Length: 214
Image (cartoon, rainbow, N blue to C red):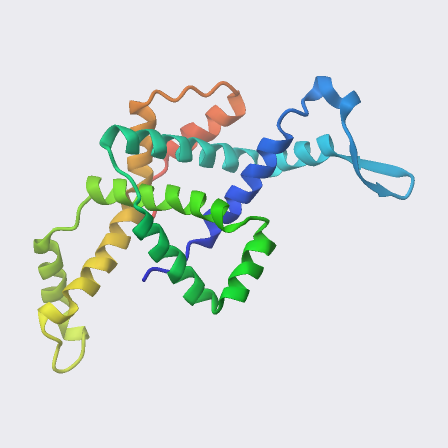
């Protein structure tokens, strides 16, 4: 089972924070409640929002766009995540974390409940299904990998049928990493993303120019 993807979920928590704070625009500062008293000064909710936007905004807007496009593309292609698939993923996370109690502590530390976790995981699993459909691993690729690497698999090398699924899993992960940027750029073009803030448009342009990362 693949390692639990914590980093994307961490970004999603910050995204949620930005969404909650988003209505605190410049014209609303007179309605901006204080969050902390620090000596003779106050730190307000708008200040928190402004700082988060300045530090994380470009990364977050890209993540929000990606999440939205994944959902729209999945609807077009009639791709869904089943309850069974979701339960399997949750069970895998619990095993990696260690216990039900540790899992609940993890959720608490992340500022979410299990339902919120399932919502985030649904996007990740949907993304993976879309990528696997766009860039499938073929039997020929699996056999080629085996033939080219069996000398490094031990002596004697395991039979092909015994390692086929393991090789496929590794190649699937490799395909997802290598093709994600190209795939996301293509669905951005297909869904006609319009960047209304020049700062974010600049970020989008640089992302589209970047080569795919593994």
